[in-house]
Image (cartoon, rainbow, N blue to C red):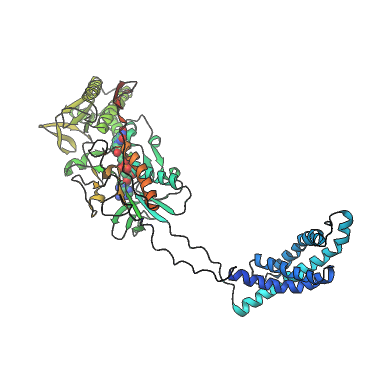
Length: 542
Ligand SMILES: Cc1cc2nc3c(=O)[nH]c(=O)nc-3n(C[C@H](O)[C@H](O)[C@H](O)COP(=O)(O)OP(=O)(O)OC[C@H]3O[C@@H](n4cnc5c(N)ncnc54)[C@H](O)[C@@H]3O)c2cc1C
């Protein structure tokens, strides 16, 4: 497969013309000034050193080197003079004590007696330094006045960095940024930006534990800014993606709510779509209006607080029908998220009974509604049956082969027809890829996921990639498509980061391949069921 051209290789600045001389013009100019000043100072040296005219030539050379090394500052007479005078001491040690005697075929004069002989030359070098320093400054100022400031140093043209913009701060986006950081080190050729509407990575597999109050919210969220060291984190909501102009529009919060801000526009060379998914109510707006989502940290905290609040109300409620409504908790969806939540909430609520003496265990109901005849379709039938039995024995009610058809405050309507009086409905029965990606002028499947090839590239859009829950990624191991799980999103991210680095070097991208590790579902009360690499576990060990 041919490597797509790296869109980061934008036309840079024009190449600088070859230099005409050996030295840059500014250094030549400084050296010429230094040579003139050194010649005048050298007259002092000629008078004090035995080498006469050779000493004058030495003064010219030292003056040229001194001036070439010092960037001139206007009217800095004192600084330049003192610096040059200070140079007189090492120059004396180098030339008068060591080199000039050696050239004359003598030993270096660093014995006490020899030093005494060359000591008067030190005064000559000091006077030379003072004179040369003063003249360098005076001549530099004069030349600057007559012909203008010295030409600027030519900086080597640095290619503009390749801009990688990742949208979505979940598993896929954060892992892509982290892997790019690892692969790039401090390389300035790449600039990584992560746009996310949250400033922390959420460990969703343990969201049920937060809703069930067995973990604190901070235990399952990691701040993005401490995780990512050289990625620019932009907290804001992606409002629009313009694939033609290669721009992301981000709505950020201003300092004040009074004046809505203009969206920030961020240009990219590589765009990584990692926007994840949202709850899908399949158009049932009335259900959406009363149900809790179960995707974000706020959802889990909201559910926990709501359950505690309902217990408080039920404790003092005398009407049995209203007590039933308050103490019935309905979860729609029998996949991992729904089952884990039902198991966790059941433990949480039954554990709370000890603190609410007016509520009987028989009044409490955690109901899981699932449209199919068996829960946990991701696991084998045997493990799913195990999970069902264990949860049932602890008091969870299952309504299998049943759909949530409608909802209103105080009741959930089921199909086949039935009605559950409840104040709590949590929706885990459907998700859909982020609606933003469906609007893009790229191919999407019927759920709205961006179709990518096996290298995670969006066909026909060089430099646009997608992964995680918002993408339809072919699974080369099974011939199907990758499931929307964190396990896959993390591995896709590593492949994608390597493909982006490869594209920057003109290498062909490689396809994503991953053997799923297995699945694990916590069903409450320190029990789980798991299938890992074909091995099945259940109970406390799992
Ligand atoms: C309750 C629950 C339990 C789960 N348990 C497991 C499990 O045990 N094992 C497993 O492998 N998977 C599990 N998953 C699935 C897993 O969480 C997802 O597959 C995974 O998070 C997908 O990663 P992602 O980066 O594609 O999406 P996400 O992790 O959802 O990240 C998307 C990110 O994009 C951000 N975003 C969305 N829209 C915008 C916007 N317009 N502007 C800015 N930012 C935006 C979101 O805030 C989010 O940070 C679970 C999911 C849930 C909800």
